[in-house]
Image (cartoon, rainbow, N blue to C red; front, top):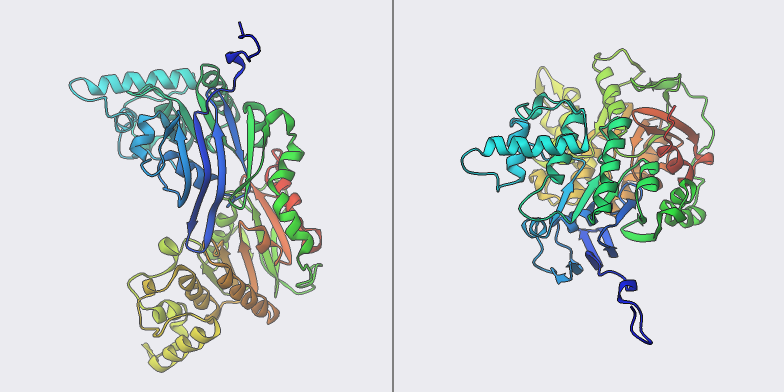
Length: 502
């Protein structure tokens, strides 16, 4: 019974399981988180939504202990963890994560991967105990899974690997499980298996556990979560009960920051109708179910939009391979150059000089009788150092002496200095400061005006607005295409999240 004149203690709000306040994180000039407040109650499933680059993954990396914030406080179960939080500490507090990039060891068996996740499985007979643990959890979440504990992970299909990853996280460990972070957990699962997982999430929450669910399938968030938090540009822009959202209002909330920018921005950077210039590149994604194709005309800047990992890069690679005669799935009229977004893995030659990284695409044109013309090579280096403003005292310096933005400039210089008539760009401006971006954007527009064609995959809406025509991808297919005059962030988001893709 409540005390006289007082409130019933049972009606008092429960102490948050997780309470983040003012969390900020920057990577150089890029602000990933701009002072985020985020709380999770026991027995609550929170949906975390937002466009690419909104800050969702960085916030979850903080909560997982993988990233230490620059500012802010972190409390878990009432304990102040600020400054001492780590992956190990998160595990002891019952916080576990299933990230989109799987953490399984492909050369180990399913049972051995369970042992890696749960070190308490040691001593005589650990293999049998690990097998029982993982199989029982697979049976509980994914009945009829068909996975054996002795299967090598490398032999499993991608969806089965996702199931193993999820089961190892939910499996009982030394510490009671209190919070599970699920980042795009159904991206590799079919509808039936995804339904099994989401049903298990609701059972886990009903028993007092907490879940953060990130998913590009809005129906999953709306139907599974108790509350939805929407992020944009490193900040929380909406946070309310899931039942207060509709699919339309959720998409609007995800794009609301950009609407203001859209209204104020200049949209007359070029023509809004398709030109009469000849088509120089044409390709259809292998999974396309209708006759839609990406078409690029001479002098056009073509944008490829949509959520990350939905076939945009694959189409650029298809076109690049076609230039080498490796594909019959597309039509190409002109030489190509490729600007990689992941410069460390696919872009720079780390042991080479800045100048060598710029000129490597053009060496054949500077060769005479099998020898490279050193004067021509030096002239090209100095020309593009000036034209694209690469900030270095000496082009003979190693490429890794440059900042990330200047390394990216070198990759653009490599493409633009070449004889390529078509430039393929794989989200190359990620993590680049705004000043460098503006310099490169101006250069792209100038080159397009001279007749060069650009196909530009980008996860940033402002970059799509610089394009003459935009194709939106979902699940490996083109689901929308629009001229610049028809372009809006709401349309791109709606198409990106449309579940009945064409």
